[in-house]
Length: 391
Image (tube, rainbow, N blue to C red):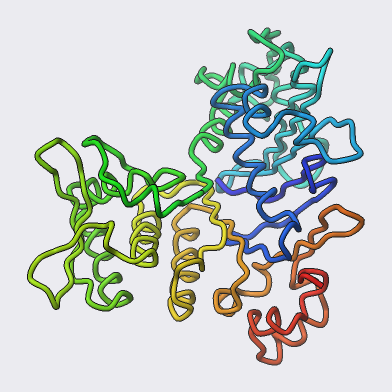
């Protein structure tokens, strides 16, 4: 499943931003405060709203008044267009506002269409906890078959219908969209969280903050040894001296990471390893995950990493996307951008206090310069990305 377009209105600096024809790998550049982190926060907001409810998702971000764009009364609106391979284009629309001071889902629509023409067909339409959903969606398009709609009532007007209905297998598209939101990953990796010993347990995927790194390493070693060996091979090429990494159980029931330097007899614990080594190991484990997230968002992956490693990392993000996990990355690194195609780059800039988005390949001058052999990162460093720098 891949997101093809996104539109956000009244979400902090994203007063009205639309991105279309999104590729498998999308890289966002812009000055500080231009909206890169805010764009990624949209996905975190949707995830929290689904797992919990809209009220909790807003509270975690300071409340509705802190999240809504300055000068706007709302509602906050998010629209996603996505599709499974060879399936109809699906559109999800969400509007969140206030009613008597309390957060509510003003409108929630899930619709799709087969083919390129005609009006989208609503599969789900809810407002403030009440609405309709089609129950025989599998019959859509069959001749002489009438679509059946059921009136549904949710427990509360701040609950998403895709949460309240997604548990039922008969709501196929709702379930598919719910899985998309549940499984996407917005990385907020903190090296300080990845270093400490961890309680013994089980983890198949790296957490947002990376605090289960040792458990994921243990899982990969035990269950996906081939992929784990690929990670170690890359570590040995990129980090001088690293010959081995292992997750070891301690006598008090904890899991620790130990790194072996080929120049020394004894291994040493993760707390003695450089920030860049820990981060590279975490990224490689994440990017070799046997089950890619449908959407992976990573902010500024260049931090703590040597510039010469960034081209390889960019290619690994692209390979991850080709395996089925769409990737969004924000960056300030010319070295990383040098490995990115112009059509994969989106420029975020500010105009009158709000963000605007432009695809780099839609800027004639950039397209001409890249066509003549210039690298994207070099053009970015020269300040030739219009509006996307600090001045």
